[in-house]
Length: 229
Image: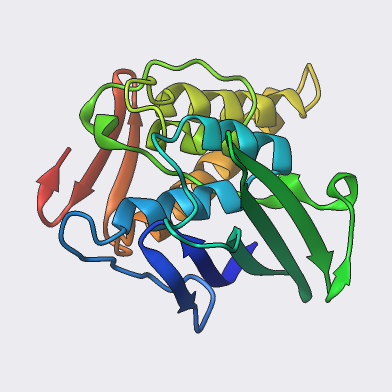
């Protein structure tokens, strides 16, 4: 899925704010002084890409209120996505009640209201991390979920996922789909999966064709014009 538009209404420092993404895979750099709303934008995006119960769980990790102060209207996070020539929209509503804020969500497919269970949450891939990004990833998660992938944005001391372990599990999963007594097919599937992972990482990290991603016995290394890390 590709994000086409994000719109915030009555969310903390934003009375209304919108970003339109002109084409698939576009990169956006967000700059601003402290208090300008950079973290609010990222956290709103993360919440808006999760299902209702997960978004409510992330909301509980936020300090303070999310709805804009002195606003009599609820806060809204509206995200529009495109996937396989279909248009999706997720509207996350944050109601300010006397004692707490309540999260509600409505999803749409091609402009028509849908239901949570029919929405393709499994096709959403997102990754986010907070100030703990310089720490070593130690979290051991067997399955991918959007809420786990963005959790360190909300709880800074939460350990990051072990990326090397995740890659090795994907490769092993590919190997397991070959016949038990077919080592050549296992090897082919492993190489195809590794090539796919390297291609995705290059795309996400904006690496060039000559840059290399190496899976070593001790971790993941990137070899580029600026060195090897």
